[in-house]
Image (cartoon, rainbow, N blue to C red; front, side, top):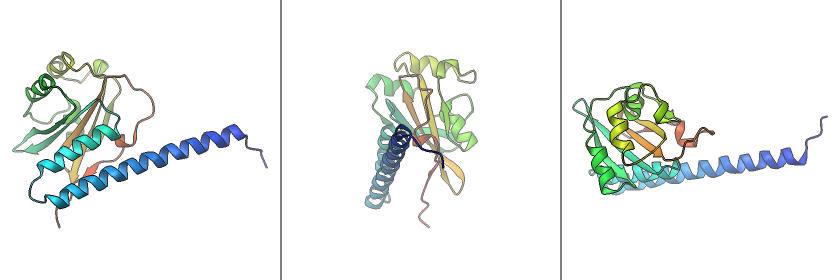
Length: 183
């Protein structure tokens, strides 16, 4: 039987602990969103505010946003950790039709999470979006996750990081948010 080194066991233990901590973070964020939903079943704004805050924390993001699909367009409904100038810049880009030329639109259209390591090198990224947001925010990595109801996108969460991140994805890079339809 091959002998396992103590260093290998320590590495595996550390990895398992990180994964457990990330799973706990996701469960805590999910529990918080569910608490908000139960307290305000008719008012969705507190839910979006909680989602945008939780997403930033889970994704280790510098800022985050949520856009809701309505009347054929994505409308910003919540922003997190942005100055008033940054919020104004973000709002100047919405409402807008979902499309593959911006990361939140790409995640919405594809119905799956999208992680772009470096927005400055993404050949499909809309030059206007890049110009408007990079003028103030200077982010490099962006993650977008669709919110699905019965498998159909109804909204999208976006999280940006100033630092370029090519390392392993965080847990928010994988799951798709699922909306509860009250049934």
